[in-house]
Image (cartoon, rainbow, N blue to C red):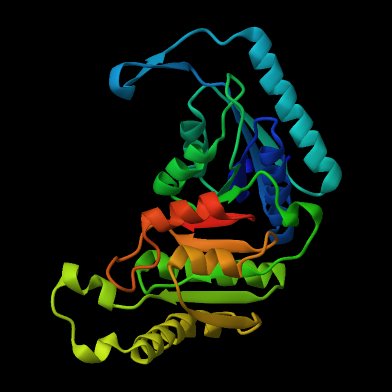
Length: 301
């Protein structure tokens, strides 16, 4: 048997819902495409009670044998299903008694982890609730990219999509660009780079004097276009095989990204931007994209 420490892994959380099944399918497809393995995680975590003002108290209890058996059957079924779809794919399973986030973070922090994939909705209960809040916490803490799959999406049905990346000039944005180009190269698909800008007049009162020339929409749009070109230059040289389309949009960043993407497209964003007039990839924006997207979303810290 191959040494697991020499394999690079896509980590995926499952809980038996359609959302996590789509996440498992997407993760397996990506792993097969890239020559990676899949590590499937189910968390049967310790119970947590909610106290006064939302304080959480961990209650460690012996795992229920019946519930543990259900989680084990889920892992076995998931591994068998993936192996039938991709016979050459290396598959491992992990049953954890930690919180779903902690279980996935432990795997994401392990040697060889490439990305973590979860569904946007999950079940409550002992089997493991990989819900939207889990995806958000993962995105904030994971050392590797986090991909969140919605309840239903076109790529789950074999529809080929593009890669949509949001750009604002921040370090998370640059990481997002590198990931997006690599993804588009592996998938042999088109990449669309989106830069959103908004009129500066609305911000003047809060930020102080602004040079009059910057109030001109044409000037602002040209500055955004120039920034987009500069941000893409290095990645284009590294991936000349990737076809690139650009969009410079006068809109809120969330609106720009969601209106550009179809349910089959992968949206790639950074988890935090630099703020200010051109701050596209703020945490609130990435969260809003997660909640509004009809297709998979990849978030990079």
